[in-house]
Image 1 (cartoon, helix red, strand yellow):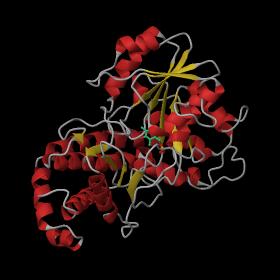
Image 2 (tube, rainbow, N blue to C red):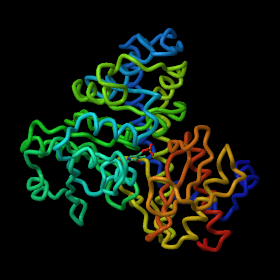
Image 3 (cartoon, rainbow, N blue to C red):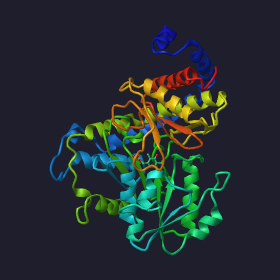
Image 4 (cartoon, rainbow, N blue to C red):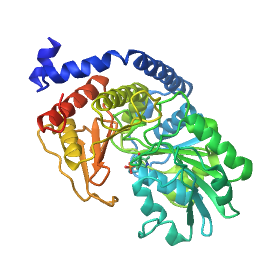
Length: 425
Ligand SMILES: *Cc1c(COP(=O)(O)O)cnc(C)c1O
């Protein structure tokens, strides 16, 4: 019956048999992911119970949004679940880049230096920082930037980091996920080691972690190993697919207050910001996020194992532990990237009938192709894939609100690659 259903969606018996063979060997890993999800589910429920979440918190506020109980409680829930003093969780934070910009610009002052000890940050941050010249960058405000790359084997260049830290270094930004780079994603444990090292030299420096795509992939967050701020987007993991917009910054009270004064205005800080009736979806999304993230993780591992078996370089490798939900697959040709994205699009519940094409996306320095048939526009906790059309022609795959949907997407991608003659099964 299941085979017939897949056939009705265009998946051939050949593709199904090939993938079925691989899925058989993933049982143990999937069980481990379920255990992490179970722990994180309890953690979130406990934070909601301890903060006495009630339906009064789902009420809408308008205008200035003073005394928005729902907003304040949601921020306490985030802070508690992530082991932080404080959090800013707002629909007015429009995306991850915006959240990172607020955290950085709120906590840096003219003359300060920003250090990335883990190599080049995510593409859109290049303009925030001023690595690529941009109107309003930190560079324009007199904040300088220094970078220490990871060593070729992916380890930290401790000597280089030590040399780069100076009296002007005010903030260190650590990106957990690999983003569009082919370097290892950092585990929470490794982030903790790096922060300990930095604080042993400069205890007063602020350590911020770009936590995008990492939330709930482990039982701890970087805030529990010394990060002063963790930052992310609600249309990725912590929104659980239900938050329609938003971002968060969680961490030390003084850092969050400075970020809030940048988000709103000096003197206003956290006290304002109407939520217009969307806090319910933000609570509920956070409640579902551990399980949604688990489904996305399974999809990433499944994809890695399938494409590895077909001989494509995959990153992370099929058998490595996961610290984010992104899977990179290097096809080596534009056609491979395009076929893969077409397959993902064809599996979507929304817009399955459209054909994705490469385009000049703002914030990126090459054409990018994106496949997304999402309930929330641009949501990448929903099944989605994107790839810059430049060597090595790698595609980045992520999301899936349920494991079964992630699985369908990967089967469709394989079918499309087979149909287009990129792979032979
Ligand atoms: C997605 C992402 C961002 C930026 O988030 P947007 O919501 O796309 O602005 C920053 N850093 C990393 C690692 C990301 O994955």
